[in-house]
Length: 212
Length: 276
Image 1 (cartoon, each protein chain N blue to C red):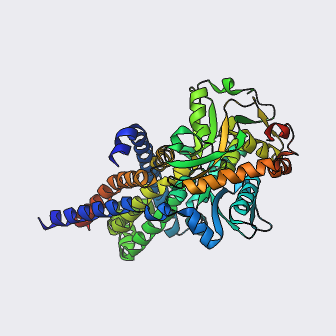
Image 2: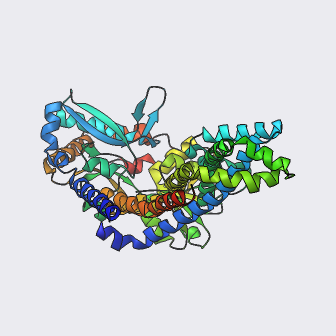
Image 3: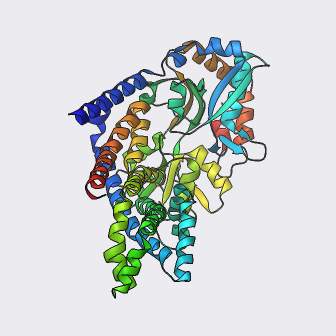
């Protein structure tokens, strides 16, 4: 393990960087997109509800690898050139946003309906009530499952290896194939993934204790 | 205090797990393969299943077919006699050495070039096929040979674990190399325009060009890639038997028949050059 670390630290560091960048981008965008679809699911508009339902059901039920390959192999043929990193990150964002939408929706729906009625009765518009009254309570409720999604997102970012996205898993494959030391190569990246995901787990637990 | 203690236990447990795991996988690959195979009357070969002409899965009857597969069948017959069985396990450039080392397969016959680095980890037979690295590009591409790739901003596609990727880094150091998981994916990526050329051994590329009109092999070969049968270190008796079998096949014309069968109809490829 130590020889792999000392001989290939540059590749591993690059991999760590790309994995982190992809995870952070996907996290931010999937949180935004997911929340938007969650809100769409609880609005009174039937059209918005249907669109959200279709989006969530499609992307929640297709394997991440299929979504990513679609962006890597099909889109460049007909639409626009997409490199591996972008394709992987887009796939990751879309896939995770479907799960986040479901998580946030369950949070919104578990806030007492009286809260919304009260806010509206006091003259707030739907969006004002949503952003000032409902969402803050909803997010507090869904911190644990949201934390799960974030950890899953980091681990799922290994899909980048499949489309040559230079992430940790990609580097691991290359290092393993150069050194022929498969066990230790994957062990090292396993530990590196732990270094990213453990703090997320602990931070989410801390938030949960403080807020919920 | 209690929490720190729990964390420490967790780390110790993890460390112990890693130590045990890295100690595994020795016993099976160190048994005498030749003896075991004679007893079972079966040799387990690792072959490619995504490489036209060498080893390609035929979806109609679920059999892997190709030059490597036929070579393996013939070598098995020479070692074990007429009733010997050859069992085939699908491998990729990336998985073949790990699968050999953990004893899942007895030998690799999967378009594997004999290289000094690989000789440090596995044992090779004598070469059974002479390939050379080349380039596959779409028809109408401006790329004529490997020198055209040596420009910043060009992207070349290869496959993880193939030594063609190390070679292209030497011949065209300015190009960016993307390593895909297998040849099928590398070819799809070339079609999708993720790179300007796909590089690997000429035999494999000709197979792709046969299957995919619109693509051609250019630039001749710029390396020598002798393919060998790989076995675990310390399996000298098995290697000797394989070498003997290859020699017998060359002597009685079996080898040339196989070459003609697989490479006789490849356009732009003179199979006579390969005959021995």
